[in-house]
Amino acid sequence: MKKIIFLTAYFMFTVATGIFAKVELPKRSWDLGTEISHIVYKEPDVMEEKGWMYGLAGSYTFREKFVFKTDGRAAFGQVDYSSPSSGSMDNLDDFIIEVRQVGGYDFCFSDNLVIMPYFGFGYRYLNDDSSGMATSTGALGYERESNYFYSPIGVEAVGGLQDGWVSGVALEYDYFWKGVQISHLSGANSSFADLENDQNKGYGLRASLKLKRKSEKIDFVVEPFIRYWKIKRSEEEPVSFSGVIIGTGYEPENNSTEFGIKLAVKF
Image 1 (cartoon, one colour):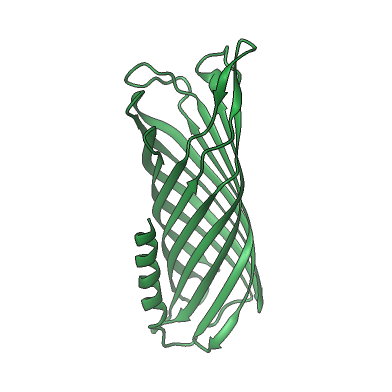
Image 2 (cartoon, rainbow, N blue to C red; image 1 turned 60 degrees about the vertical axis):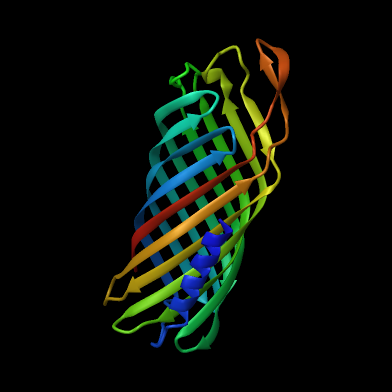
């Protein structure tokens, strides 16, 4: 993963340093678009899920040296599950909802290069639902809800290219404040109580390259991206069956990698 981030950063740097036209950033702007991505979620030596996600994304930006940006996305898809111990099953319903608020400041190094460091707060919700399904070995599935609270810390560079094109690159570290994992074990067996685990350690990484084609009223944006999370093992909590504690349960250490592309209009 570190090699991927390094190569992405190097590619973005070479693009950013190739700018040679004046860039003008609007005071207020909206972005609305659609995105497609492939996500791989892994709990090492425990299980893996992977599949395609399809979503909508939007943002509003206000800038006057200080920059304030609100953005959100919702993505839906199906993933395939595999585990060395419990077998496999296909077409689990997944959806992700994410909202973020960041603030930054524009540093104008020239007429054609603006660099904005930024900081903010984000919330990511993932629902993975295999309730009513069974694996190839007969293990029953259940609904899982994942909640991440984090702070994006990043830098974005915007520069002008010839013929009405604008390039933008962003690198980001996501400081993980807290996670809450809810496992609806009652969906597999109604005698189980649902389990809620706190996740206290982890981090995220993001990188994207944005190419924008300017027109008189609406700009067109193409933005390939990568999003990565690595979360440590959660705290343990009691597992109850028919009101009797029979042991403890936890969310294993896990990581997810999402590659995708966003197509949007800016106005």
